[in-house]
Length: 131
Image (cartoon, rainbow, N blue to C red; front, side, top):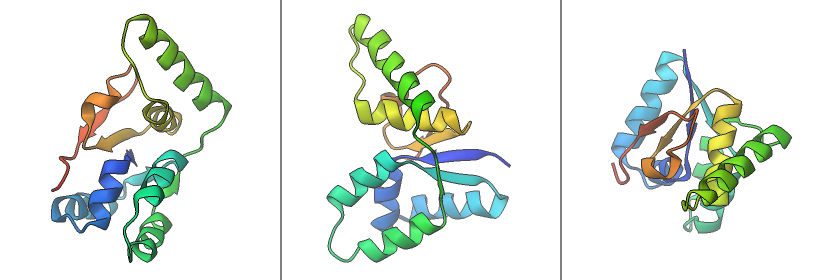
């Protein structure tokens, strides 16, 4: 059994009925893997939700575990952003917090934007957008 945190891209593809994403998530659950989500991704999806998707989002969220975002995650996200900025790389606040939430629950990140999460201690599983 392992843990995975679903990024915003994965949640959107699930809501849009993308078969590859739905299949991958069903496989995770059938293996007994823990599937997490964090408040940042929930906010991003809710902000862009389409008419009629709200009920399905609530159903999906009911099957996921909430990854906490507290002081340790905030400090890690801030450290990454500060360190990368010194090297000339910009890391968005949302991506830093999502990655820190994944580290906090020892989960890999499922995302369609694997390049956004090139960070120390973060394992990424690429789920191509639109599949």
